[in-house]
Length: 177
Length: 156
Image 1 (cartoon, each protein chain N blue to C red):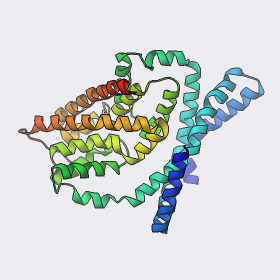
Image 2 (image 1 turned 90 degrees about the vertical axis):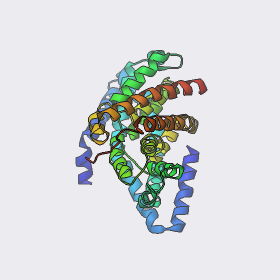
Image 3 (image 1 turned 180 degrees about the vertical axis):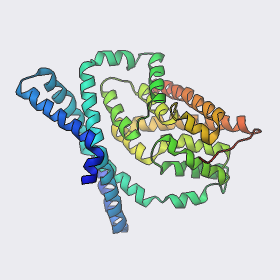
């Protein structure tokens, strides 16, 4: 608890200041403050606070049930279609920002994954991560999420093919940092 | 929303039947992530509430709404390429922006570049792949994001 407050004190301070500002707005009948609170803040809050806990329980469950080691074992065994399926699966169970994907690509490279699959991994990493998909569906709707995924996948593959073609006869290396 | 709640409850029950311990662990993990994100989300909502108060919907719709033209894609792509916003914040933000009149296609461009193009992280990427590959990859995805936006604009 102490640790938690320590880590997040700036954000909680902003929340407290905003609460004080809103209270003052209502007390002194300050129109702008009231509008910001009841037309914007409360409307946005209602939507998020209700389903965020559910989303995070799902993410937590996915995290304990899907084992990274199992998928990683298969990487590089096959550089073809099967390898592609594995790198996509691997990317789905990751979390975090893009620069977190680079160390994994080094691992893929060392284990013998093809150039194409390495770049498919990077592309899929940004589109198909399970926690992110849940957020996308939650906040933007399953229709948008589905369309975006279906439109993005072929583009990821085309870009990976371009990269493979370009580097086919050149030296390609992923370095460890 | 109801679908999500039902899905969560079903998953918890299934998970519990198969493995009590794992379910507990997953539950705890999820709640911990939620509590860590909660203050960030609250601040995000506060900031957007204030910004949207000063920025009328008409202005947003004019520059980033449906029919705002190709320039809106370029703006979204540039912001997405430079900004370093985690997805846990980008999606709630996008959800609010859509409700304020920003078109789905612009949001798609923003999210795609945010996730796949990183100008600030280019030096880091270059350490792994070399500068040339990093630049080529980022440029291809920048163009790819614009194409994704155009296609989604045609569909939705």
